[in-house]
Length: 469
Image (cartoon, rainbow, N blue to C red; front, top):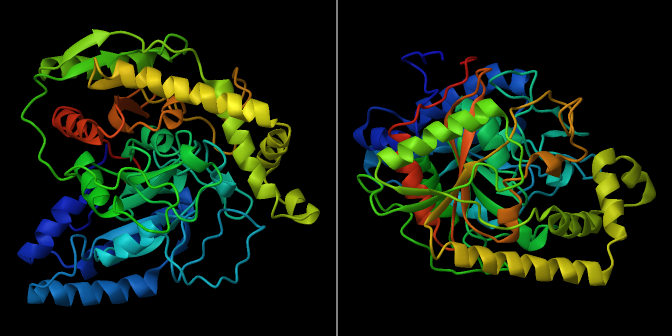
């Protein structure tokens, strides 16, 4: 790992930045200028940004600096540089969704709830991060912007669909990053890039316009620390009247301090869910992290949650959602789509109403099963990913046993079906020096348990910094 130089901010957190703004030892102007300079240096290698908002970000940083000098910050994130995923509407910036079928002309006049809440809190949007076309897969490349790469090794994928956010978070190109996750799209890149990402309980963070993946899709933060994710959620997780799938509108105290240790926590550890093949070096690193849980006072029981692989259920709902995109596109536009996305969208056209309703029933059964499981356990812990990052530009590892991207993400999508909070926390490096993620899952609306256990674990686990910094 490289050590960051004294005059740049490769590992600065948002919590630390806000403290320094208040002390007067750092200005938003200096931080934004540094972020923009490092975007200019690193983005040609990783392609994490679909657009960079340089001029406006600098103007907003100057205004924020004046407010801090006067002791009148406008909100809890005043002056903090953030990024928004290219699937999320952002006033003044194009939202192309990684697709040549979208118009470059705009107008870009409306903020999605997340963008609005971040602006109102004083955050400075420094750019939009890349996604696969319409966010359809677990890696990040698209016909419009090309291939996004992993800062740990640019030959490899950062995962997806929030791969641009993951790469930006790993390099600290901005301090807070918005991701979305309908089948693992926050947690996959968090694991592959050595960052923290949480898919909160469905409904905490409002969505508008609604995702094509409906109630599978969750919006959440991707950051370098769990404390920064909690800070971001305290702003993001607020009601918005436009959200047609509003869940529980009263969230927890996201900023509640973590406990001194994990005494009293009941944790289930499943190394493979009963059916997943996990790379041996990843399994060893996860076992080491679980030993830390025990050393911190948690009671850990090795037990599988007791459900069969719900891939068919997930695919039925996923493919049906993808089909919605085709309804708005003519034949010429459909021919311009990522071939993989076009394939699953057409497979979705073959999903019958009875098959779709059967998948909904199976989803409800799984949700009830996990609710009962979490009456016994505060958390379920697994690996986030069973494999290491693989060659960029491929949907599945070349020469491997996998057919579709969902085949190599078996730990993530079950908990989109159940809408539970789930996070990936970096827990070390595999035998090839690549990040490994620890997956933390709690019962529905128990997000604070995930965040607090992650914050306690961060005290003993290494903070990962790409060698390229």
